[in-house]
Length: 439
Image (tube, rainbow, N blue to C red; front, side, top):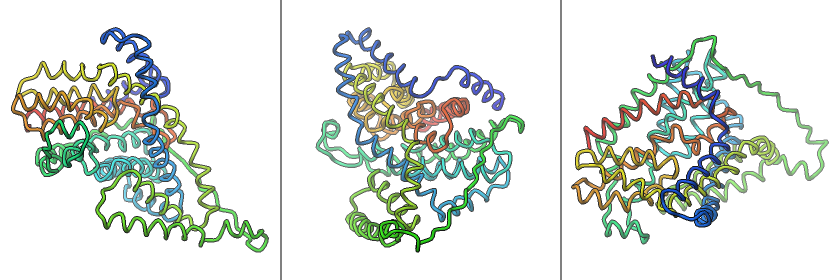
């Protein structure tokens, strides 16, 4: 039944699902019209909301481009290729490959979502190359399924946000109250959901495996590197091939990172990117090797560069018009103390389609969820984690976070979305039922 469902959704998506760029434009138009019709916004006001929001993700977009490009360049180095190959060869069958990719991706994404997106995609590629009869689109979907737990892990923006005191409006909303991580990320209820997904997702992904004749593999041949004749090079070319150039920058960066981590200043995408840059420079040995790999990898970032501003515009319209707040309020108004966590989870899943950012979503929903939770007697930790799980849940069919993974894999959204729909249905049923019983 699961395999037939996956095949049915795959056929539907292959025929009807357009490119992610087209989806972003359609989503923009839908939100624009919805703001005019349901929020009594004028056409010019909605255009202003869009224009005011469209460039607000530029910094984040650049961070994601760098994660994609620097991670790919690092993976193209000989030592990392060898390490990924060794891990991939732990799997002897396609089913073992799916389990390996799913669990590795979940672990990496629990540690840090940016790191996990790169690791999952690169490992899936290696498994597809080295395990005969693997189905590459399903391996990429399995890697993407690990994103379900990112917001309940060490880089979850909502639990980290409420664990510290700030000076912004959201911190003032909590009246200086903080929620320690032991009540969110490390709460037994949260860990129980993570464990249930870690057990069930590999099984679900295996059950979706198509018949042998319908599998799509991946074959990449490593071209031998040309033999360099240093004696025939000009002084400038010799400098480009000299390791000391790379290692001078690596040394400076390493000194900075040592001081940064010694001061316990946290860990963000900037530090991840710097680590990827320094590791790549060290493992590629010389500037010319690194630059060649960079030129090869950078073209894959076009989807992020083009589409992230569109999603920023959608977020601007959702917040500026009041659509996001009204949507959340409608869900909250229909809940009771018992159903509030589940209703909040579902509302967060819906809002995530239009505000695909954990921090941005909390900014939209917190002013509604926090007072409602207090009125109903639901703890802030449970309300916040319900939002976090909802935000992560519908990422399975929201193209925003799939863009880096698709760029690394070379696939299009149609090739993995059928499997992601099945994962969405299963995980939604599992997470919502556990939230209802445990929260």
